[in-house]
Each structure stands twice: as C-alpha cells, then as structure tokens.
Length: 85
Image (cartoon, rainbow, N blue to C red; front, top):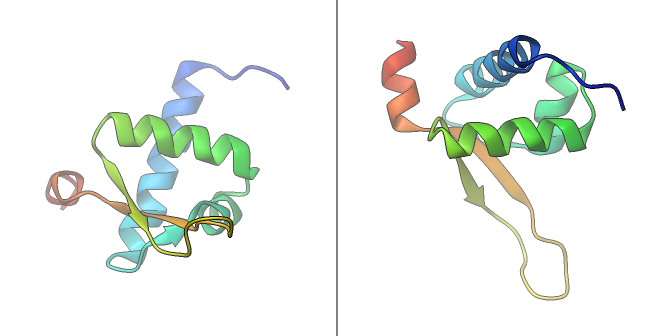
C-alpha cells in the first residue's frame, strides 16, 4: 500500500467528520463511512481511530458480544459538533 502525506490524511479525516456531521444523530458503521468517502474499511478505521484519539469522534457499541460479531458505530463527539457549527 502506498503511503499518503500527512496533509492528505488530514483532508480525508475532514471528509469523515463531514459525513458523521451530516448523519448526526444517527451513528454510522465503519463500512458505511468507508462507502461514503470511497475508501477501504481498514484505512477508514485508521482514520476513525485517529479522530477518536483527537476526541472528535466516539464509538457507539451496538451489537452482540461474545462469540458473535460486535458492531461498532461512530458518531461525532459533542465537542467537535460545537466547533463545527
């Protein structure tokens, strides 16, 4: 996989924030965010985890736990929402 510049990574992160802002208050799965920004799931997850470290998005755990799959959905954080408008 090719490396991308920090500037491009931040632009993609802004796109992710825009998608989550537009869908508020409905949380979106990583797959749905990836579809919206036309990127693969793994890269989108890296971006979402970066944004979570920056406290701009938060996880919403919805789904089954244990041996069955666990679905993680994402929403924009309250602090990011107030900064954006």
